[in-house]
Image (cartoon, rainbow, N blue to C red; front, side):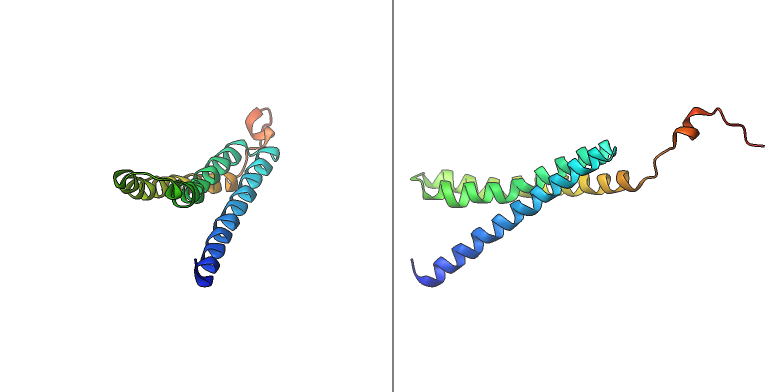
Length: 122
C-alpha cells in the first residue's frame, strides 16, 4: 500500500475513533441526566447515543474486518447492501430519540407543592 493510502486509512480510523468518543460522552450525558432526576431524558439520550454508535462500529466491522476475509462475491454484495440500511435506520431512530430527550429534559418539572394540592390560593 502506498503512503497516501496509509494516510487515508489513518484518517479513516481517527474519524471512527472520534465518533465513538463523542458517543461515549453522549452516554455519559445521559447518565448525568439520570443522576439529576431526569430519568426519561437520560434513558432516551443513552439509547440515542448507542444507536448513533452503531454506524462507526458496523463500518469498522464490515469494511475493515470482514472485507479482509475470503468471502464470496454474494456475501460482499449483501454487506454492501445491508450496511447503509442499518446505518440509516440507526441514525434516524437515534435522531428522533435525542429530540424527544431534549424536549423531555427542557420540560419544567412539577414541584411537589403543585402535586399535593394542599395549598389554597385566596
